[in-house]
Image 1 (cartoon, rainbow, N blue to C red):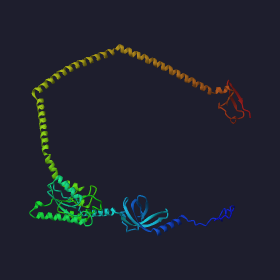
Image 2: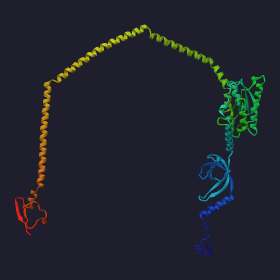
Image 3: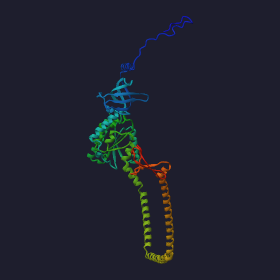
Image 4: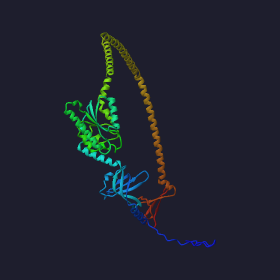
Length: 470
């Protein structure tokens, strides 16, 4: 540090010595952060939603755990055999247990997963799917074991809570659609611990009641079917109808069972096992009373329907009668004779038209033949041919004259070129052609001339004889 100033002119050291500092490499800093996280945070439980799930060929699983404001990189190594990997799916909410650490090559912190648990409703959903697959494999959902419902039930058993909204909906629909339907209530809880056993017991109780009625003399008091129902709610609220004991009680029931649990979007195990599934309690009551309701509606509309059918029959018969009268009028003998007379008139008119048209065609043909004979008279034809022959003769003479003129011009041109290339033109410029006087061979080089050889030199005009000297 600079020295403190002792006066207004003493500023201390202007350039103090640099303090000693420790410089870390990236690897060292990352390693310290990793050790700090592992020591201070260590093993934790984190909850969130899975996203970006990817399974590597090495067997490791990488994914991101996120919530509304942040996200965390996670890795599940292949060696964690105690973890159920099927629980990891994109979009699924889970609770993860593991160790917070740093992946040094990238300098990012991540959670090394060692435990996986489904969060809240997810665990119930897994249990639902497992029980569903188990019962399906045993044949409890088989379509061939579904029994048809009686069309006109007289007495039904109702398994539901006596204080819930479902029983009010069922009674309201039954009173409106089939007030004569008798209902035997087997009250039970439909939610909470022990509710599944009460529901199964109520179903068994109604079956025992029905068996007692059938074995006794009062068989008219026997039940036609059982309705198991309750209002809507969450998956936890409806869980009693997803218990195996309820499913087996429905399966073992001697009476057909209708399941009307929850709302339209709710599905329970009892829906799959029951002989018929209704979307809501009201819909279940409507299905059960449909036969009587539709029959009453049919009877109430029967008189109007009969009146409409009778009126329709009258209209049809009137139409058939009208068509028959018209058909008889069309086949009356007088009308047929009139048709024949009209056809005779048409045939006569057509015959007259044909005769006139034939005469017109023959007249036109004779006129055309006369014109052709007039056009082919021999004198006229010979005059035309003579004129054509004269024209052809004149054209031939003209072509021969032009061809001779063309050849004459070409010959003159060739003659001029030959004259220019001839030796006379070269001799006219002062040159001469020397040949051997004895043989007439043209001498082109001095080496070909021998001493004493007689030579002949041709000039433009005349020749000169000479002898070569050595």
